[in-house]
Amino acid sequence: MKNPKFQIYKDKSGQFRFRLKAGNGEVVLTGEAYTTKQGAQNGIESVQKNAANDTRYERKEAKNGEHYFVLKAANAQVIGMSEMYKSASGRNQGVQVIQKIAAGAPTEDQTV
Image 1 (cartoon, rainbow, N blue to C red):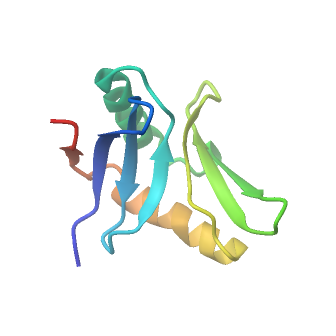
Image 2 (cartoon, rainbow, N blue to C red):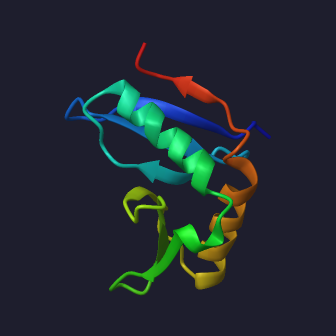
């Protein structure tokens, strides 16, 4: 089992993004696109600050019946979004994973 970690990377359009990977290597949260690496780093810090607060999660259901969540900052701005889950309980487990691992997860810069 791997250790959980944040990764900063560039998407196809050259924007900076981050993702949080759980100990099993699964991506549990993907951040918004940022024009600078510092923006992505600030996004990670915001996740670390807000992840433990259950009220920051908006649990949603997609039109196709799959479940997901968004993590928001205190100002209600979206910080990141989860992958799709088949069930509400799977989505809720995803929230619990982030609440446990985000604060202590190191960051790996894949843009260098």
